[in-house]
Length: 77
Length: 177
Image 1 (cartoon, rainbow over the protein chains, first blue to last red):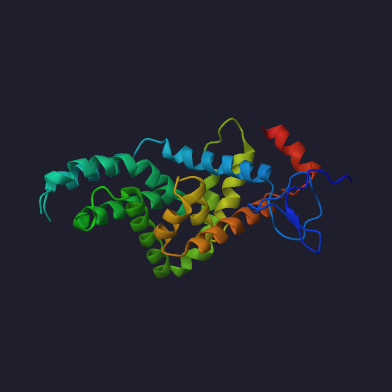
Image 2 (cartoon, each protein chain N blue to C red; image 1 turned 90 degrees about the vertical axis):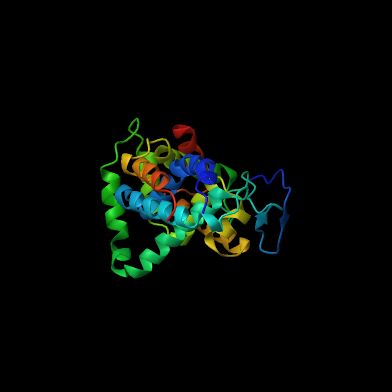
């Protein structure tokens, strides 16, 4: 395997990490640590936002909207 | 207590409800319980409006109330923690799939299986739009703690989803892209 484009520092064991803590994605299979490629991080990020947004885009249930109106109308406690 | 001043605050509350609800669902995995959580949060927020300084981070304040409520409820109901996996998975099976994307379904299940603190950190930073510093305030911990929880959550998700470095991952990503 040709090692090219090394921009990060490497330590004695040959592990490679860039300054920002992410892995150089051109390097595969040599990790002993748990760094993660930008691709995988982006993949997880997309799914995370999709799952969150799916709920966030649902209409607010009636009982919660009613509660807000109820609280406002009752005024001081 | 002058409630008129809270008209704009009420609008702000409405504005944050969707995100609060999405966060609640990510925490407890159950829409019914999530709505209970949001309801309880709204009550508490409303009753403690005097302790909120307008102009400061309302979203963070609301999220803090919600997550504190969730975790203190959970401490009271230890028994349900063991079942969390099963009930969440059961809920997921009734969620309609969008465009038959098993990928996202798999992801939701894996997300539900993370430890609560890791899932919370990941959602706050990766989906709810908070900075690490804000997430640390919401969770009541150090910024470094949030960062390590997020890293562990990502790694664990990667493991659970069977995603590994190498060509296998690259081809899988290009297929689902």
